[in-house]
Length: 439
Ligand code: GH3
Ligand code: MG
Ligand code: MG
Image (tube, rainbow, N blue to C red; front, side):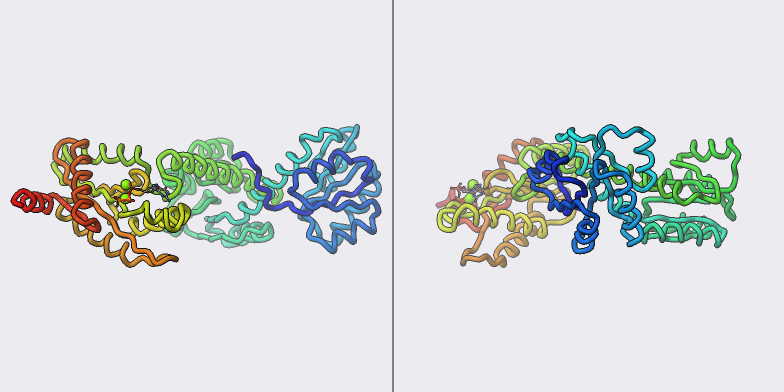
């Protein structure tokens, strides 16, 4: 679960004398995550840099600050400005590090802290992922001043952001159906104040990044905008590096928030869904059924339950193997999902048994869905010459969930015992029993 996905950094170029960073080199090789190139002369360095796609450059400070500065100057000259750079340091002072920082080195690694070396590269890698995601974010800019719109758009363009929509009037933005990640809002606007626009946006989009941009420098205005729910307030004319750095930080937080929400969703799904079919599991379907039963009881609405069991599935497993059986189960689940209506809920009740909750449905109406399922399943084509059929039962809720399950189960077994490949519902069952009894 914790395994790190290296997605950006694959090729690393280290410049220095290899004897000095032997342990670090070993750590990189052992991780099995990277291709590492080592160079000790500047000519070799440029050669490797030009003939490979390098995603991370590491300098060993022992090779000397003059050499490093010369190389960095040269690589900027060559237009290579986006590759993150790390410096392996020993006892450099803050001032010395600051000098390196000013020429573009943003990561410092203390030689010998080997366990942290790969972790640091993973962190840089993750940051690269955020940078990429950030560039894909959608941004709405609202300003009635066309020149301001153009200035902001130019800045965003220059920084690789492509998904930008410009709005000159507040209504255009408020009426737009598009939801943006980031909103940049001017304060003085025609018809409605920027504060109101921001207030409305915040009300609708709890997680959006909202930034007020204006020439008003009054502290009370700034405080008001922030109190309304804007994430920040910037004064025009914006300073490009500060503006972009702030935007990136807010954007990154938004990405992290979305990531966490997704992780939570995955965990929630794991608890309520079956791994093979991704249908709801037994426990969850039971809970849902109880909720639906309460509603049906309270509002005196019909509710039915369909139970389905694949016919002769053991024989299929025995003949074609368990793995094929698994594939069949997964594909059947998709067909079940396609065959039901929006309000119906399918679950995997156990091995090759499924249940479908049919709200607002009588057993007789449920039979129509049963027929549709049988038809769709009968049209499935498999690698081997097999035909899948179901036996099933549809029971209608009266006053007890246990009874409902018992009835559906009972009907399903009646279907099994009367030749399989059929889905019985209450009326049919009665008719069947009557015939049975008269025999
Ligand atoms: P019947 O028509 O009476 O229902 O016969 P059947 O063979 O379908 O029923 P039985 O209960 O005898 O066997 C069910 C089979 O379903 C046995 C079991 O190996 C198989 N099964 C249950 N869960 C899975 C699964 O997750 N994957 C696979 N491949 N097979 C499964
Ligand atoms: Mg079966
Ligand atoms: Mg069974």
